[in-house]
Length: 209
Image 1 (tube, one colour):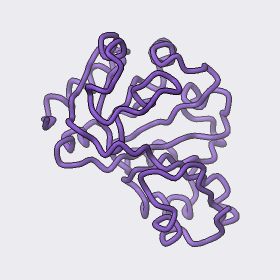
Image 2 (cartoon, helix red, strand yellow; image 1 turned 60 degrees about the vertical axis):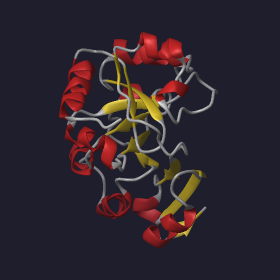
Image 3 (cartoon, rainbow, N blue to C red; image 1 turned 60 degrees about the horizontal axis):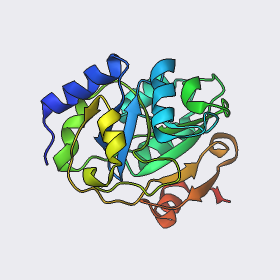
Image 4 (cartoon, rainbow, N blue to C red; image 1 turned 90 degrees about the horizontal axis):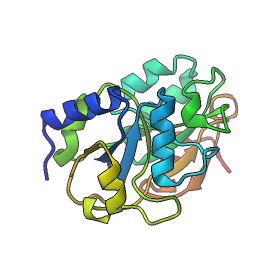
């Protein structure tokens, strides 16, 4: 399946209206909603059966949009993000301004950021300008979905919008901790996935924990 501009517009309208969407990213299928809409976030968590104190990522389809939304990021961190994103990463950032608090849940000092690298078949989503609260499209603790058919039918039925982007790579994002990178140059990989540690080391230098 190839997504078109109309699909991207549908996704924007769904999120703006407080809906929950199933959509394809660069790694696995995700669930998304407005990260500033408490009712939508609560509904997404209920659909996933995800503990309310567990954080989710905020996804931007364009890196410039993410950097504009996080003006307090230092130059060293911005350089790292420009070197690595878009890509199959969830980047943990220091969040001194407490931005996107609903996504941060019980960890307001940390923000998880995603900027996916979209394959040609889903590249139309790059035109979506709204940030999304994003989590994988599965029940908490269950396997990630590589295809739309692998998304729990109950989740698909409950979503306000379902976008089929065909088969995805299926490897979850690598979780990269950059919270100490600005001041100390330290970084660590909390989960190795779509992006290899060696790729990160080549881009980041500094100290890996």
